Amino acid sequence: MENLVSVASQVAVLFVLMGVGAALRRLKLLGDGAIGGMVNLLMFVVTPCVIVDCFQRPFDQAMLGGLGLAFAFASFGHIALIALSALCLRGGGDTRRTLRLAAVFSNAGFMGLPLEQAILGPRGVFFGAVYIVVFNLFIWSWGVKTMREECGGGREGLLKSVFNPGTVGIALGLPLFLTSARLPAVVAEPVRHLANLNTPVAMVVVGYSLVGVKFGRVARSGGVYAAAALRLFASPLLLVAAMLPFRRWLDADMMLAMVIASSAPVAALVSIFSAKFRRDIDVGVAIVSGTTLASIVTMPVVIALAMAVL
Image 1 (cartoon, rainbow, N blue to C red):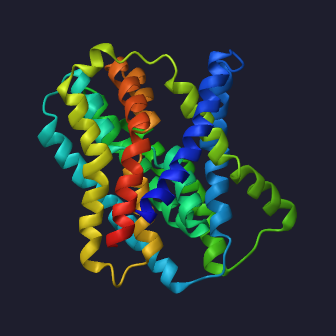
Image 2: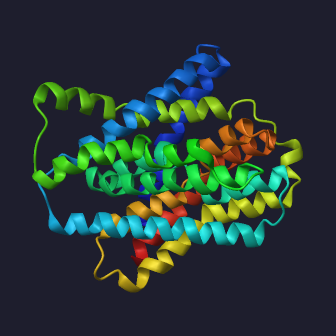
């Protein structure tokens, strides 16, 4: 119960920040153009800065091993969800393609990183960054292939699966960690200030996106509930089950960071992909918004359970 209350309070803080974003849209103080710029700022500037800032720490052999294990468990989680989504969400129609992506990919950046920072501190973000790298590898390869009619992700998908904000952050931050090097203060301070924008700006963007979503037709689709259940419950619980036999030998912060990232609602990129590839846009937007609202209940419960058993 103590874990549940603690996590719920942290999630509640995030939802208050989302409320600010929703209010700004209602009051017409923010527009789509401004939000688009904020998303670009978060993806291409803030996310790499968050990762680099967390990697500025003395080298630790155990933490280096934890990075490798985090990569392995994050990969396992994505592969398991791909298999489950194929089993539970069969068919090749526009809606099914969108729902399979929704089941597999979590909002590990906008929702996961702020919660990892709040609950675990820099160590949580250190390991959570690996989940984001794995997320990008899969969404720009398998994700693009699934949303396209033809086989293969194409050159664009291959390049973006390798060169993305997560891998750039790791590429810049890992040498600092391996050598215990510190950036000069004139660089480190701006990086830290930019990293601190992640939580408030990300939550304002998510809250803005929640306003005006039409759930009518989408709410009558059984596939939507199946995809939401896979994303909010099956994904984190599979990782808990995979790590549980080895919990005595694994880093506790690494395990919990993986669970937090995998318990996050559907990734915002799912709605973007549904529009980009002309799939079911209504379902894409609604399931991102619906699972985000539901996560105020599901994330505290799942994370508290993981804290109790891992």
